[in-house]
Image 1 (cartoon, rainbow, N blue to C red):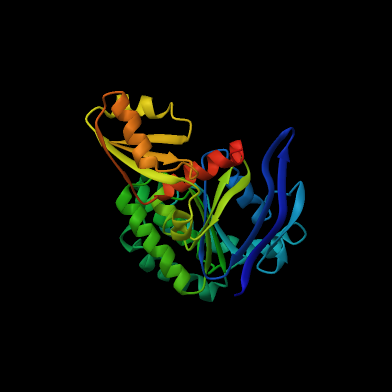
Image 2 (cartoon, rainbow, N blue to C red):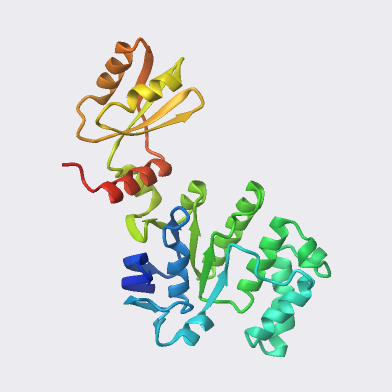
Length: 312
């Protein structure tokens, strides 16, 4: 499979702080590759190094065959970049923003009109063409930003937490647009802290403090989680939560309504019986059963292990 991005030992330091720590990547073309992680995990810094906006402290990265450090202009010609903050001009209309971006990308006059027309139609901006960007809703501004980022038909699209300020329906529509882009051969990198978005990616890297804590297809990560997942239903979940956190093999307890979702060390034998017995000792009768892992479970297990290391 053709490779869009390769990175080896990619590192970026800001003084004594290491924002990205020896990151290795191999991202195939024509896929959606996700970076999942909290704020401060190194997602945005990685993106800036990939597109040549930030020079790595160590390591090498090639983007679409170009060295991102030595040939940043060549890299930028191949990509579109959409930041988490709206980066177009509030005082300009939809058409004026798109015309300005077309000028920046140096689109020939004969192509500019057609590309803008296609972008308005594809992203449902036709009725908004004379509206100022500053008066548009979050979802409308998002569609305009994506139209601008793809106006020059980039081979690679970098999206840095692009749905952080929009409603769930707009997020769903946005992702449908991304899969349309992939159908044309575009490679997409997207950073997010939404678990449901991460599940939509073909492949995923979970970042924690600048390092890859886990990587792979979302379904594979959920199947191969390094933990046993237990679900507990009881009448007093808060009390049960406090009791279970005292069990040595329990890694985390999350309350979901009246249920408790528990990650247990995989070396624990017969976890259902032991958890049930511990709750009985505290006079907290409960229904205890194993359940399938979610991507959030994978994230919690992976980042906890990356911070604490393997259990001894």
